Image 1 (tube, one colour):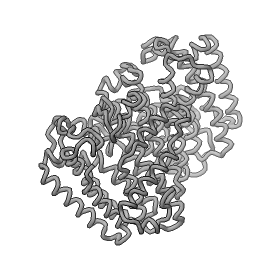
Image 2 (cartoon, each protein chain N blue to C red):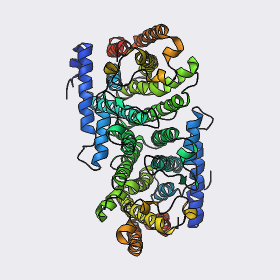
Image 3 (cartoon, chains in turn cyan, brown):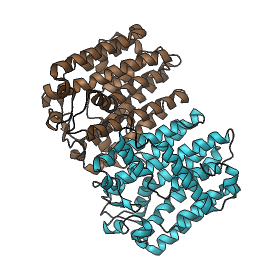
Image 4 (tube, each protein chain N blue to C red):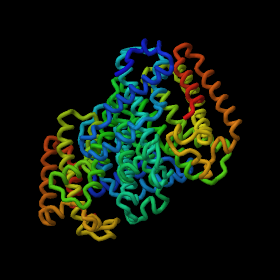
Amino acid sequence: MTNKNPMKQNQLAFPEWLQGRVRHVEEVLDDLLPSADALPARLHEAMRYAVLGGGKRVRAALVYAAGQACPVSGSVLAVEASLDRAAAAVELIHAYSLVHDDLPCMDDDTLRRGRPTAHVQFDEATAMLAGDALQPLAFDLLASMPIAPALIVQATQSLARAAGSQGMAGGQAIDLFSVGRALSRDELQTMHSMKTGAMLACSVALGGIVAGASSATRQALDAYAQAVGLAFQVVDDILDVTADSASLGKTPGKDAAENKPTYVSLLGLSEARAFAGELREDALAALAPLGDAGSRLAELADFIVLRDR
Amino acid sequence: MTNKNPMKQNQLAFPEWLQGRVRHVEEVLDDLLPSADALPARLHEAMRYAVLGGGKRVRAALVYAAGQACPVSGSVLAVEASLDRAAAAVELIHAYSLVHDDLPCMDDDTLRRGRPTAHVQFDEATAMLAGDALQPLAFDLLASMPIAPALIVQATQSLARAAGSQGMAGGQAIDLFSVGRALSRDELQTMHSMKTGAMLACSVALGGIVAGASSATRQALDAYAQAVGLAFQVVDDILDVTADSASLGKTPGKDAAENKPTYVSLLGLSEARAFAGELREDALAALAPLGDAGSRLAELADFIVLRDR
């Protein structure tokens, strides 16, 4: 495991810190996912394929950065081990949602992170079951965090709601029902705050819960998360128009081709960019009460808004 | 809500007790599922359609009967409210698994409990997302049980493992991979103990966890659950051959037609019946340490083995 010491982590420049966290959570995921040798082997292979195939690991990074933004009372080692499990849990939920989203009955995508999607690599039924099995594993990981049971219960509730019908799954349903329909800006924002924002906000919240943050800190984290969550989606919509397949690792221009409403189709490219910039300012302003401890979260906000893939 | 008083429940004959519990958990589910008016309405409609469309509610009944088998220390009201949530949680997981199992990429079934399956009534994407959203709702319900957080964490872990790749989802994967293959009796037993047995056993375990059962009681419950879980599947295989569509509420003879291995294809009808009888004896023997408190569980074992649908 890399960069275990939080002091060392704080001395790193952002790109090295992020790279270290990405590498670390991939080791954690590799370790916590069932082995491809364990029965049912083909299901476990598909789960590992879906989760370990790269990705930006933004959600995991948000868990770590939020945990780091809070003063730790109690065992630093227990908090770090718990942040690992929380970071892995949000990545598992994210990975399952991509697998199901790529299925023929949903987006029918064949390319993800530059590789065949799970149902192309395996088959539809295996891909669906792999997604189905990733979801409870996420809750299992939270339940095994070495922190106070009351905090585990809060974390479970946060993840369950972020993943559920009034969070991510609900946002995907609204997205599905809105293909070819004109959405208002408010409707688009509701859809994205559920589809993408809920899990990004949950990632930030889990960092705070695991570290035992005060309610004032949790409020600051929440305000930050709302702004960053929305910014993430606005930038995604911009990249769907401006990026090419190679740098994006998935099929670009698909949303526009399917007449899906996006921030770009609604606001135009230049106003969408301005909106992303405003949200970045909001995110940074929300971090003010945390002082220097919030610097990784600030850097992550910049990373999310200024990324090119 | 019906039959709230555990003393009153104990005086009822089994059919009235079971009917009361079924009616009660359906009220609980109706109450805890998101309203069909709440956004996204179509997703919530599909979730409600999948969960509230009848069913035997065997898993819920096992939660209640196991809870009743344990001496309650602490608030009876808190335990009863928690048993309601645990019973609802196992029914949500069961309902989601049926929705996904019925999809074209899996069993491609059009009839379930005498009604069109969810993807026929709605569409494939909505059915898949409804299943996806039922799963976190189950964990949310456990997290909101009014009992000690440490018990909630145990319950969460139990449900997560029963639903996951080494439980129900894993069993479905093995079932899928074994179509047209000859399975040994051991392989068939492993598949069923994961696919159906894990969630039945979890239902019994949750009753014990919620009631704060001693480890001796939990062991007795577990032995009972193993036998009943397997008996349930053996009887299912028998009914797939002997029952008609009207009483079964689903398409019978499908497993045999698809060359899926079953206890009947492996052992023959009469030996399969004898095996179910043996498992019933094992279940009853496991309950001996619980004395009279285990009588509802004993009646449920009889109900499961002697049912005709």
